[in-house]
Image 1: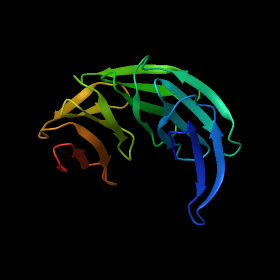
Image 2: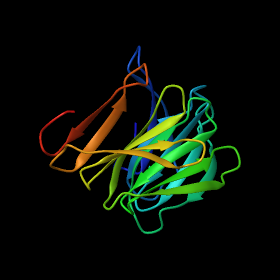
Image 3: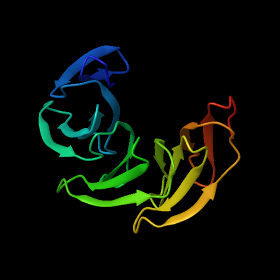
Image 4: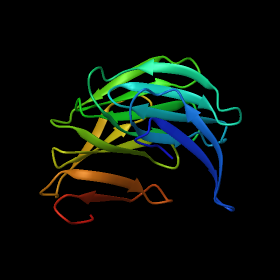
Length: 178
């Protein structure tokens, strides 16, 4: 879990026991995701610090700096555990190689803050939600925008893929799910 107290906590969900506290961020942690193998966590804190953690030891492995001066709102990890995609108030998404810590590309196309990101179960496409009232679908490999989805009348705040990867659901400040 990510927290306003600048930490992350790892929990045993069966017992409800806190297993470990990860300390290293200097401001509120806004987003966190765990790699599919469970060995690493990726976190983002105000305003632009991204960290990669070893979940077994709690050790910070790497700090990444991206989205300079802007809040990172969401993070998603590809099913192969190789890339992390961060959404930000700077109207972009950034794709990072988790092993090397290298920024691979920036996805541009939204006209307002990107509020959420999700990756399809097959890892081939990414969907982003934005305060510009749209969702965008991107090709994971080359970063090309494939499609823009419209229909919300307020900021889109969340998005998730169905397990089949063929459908997604979005939530908006217009008080609807689509």
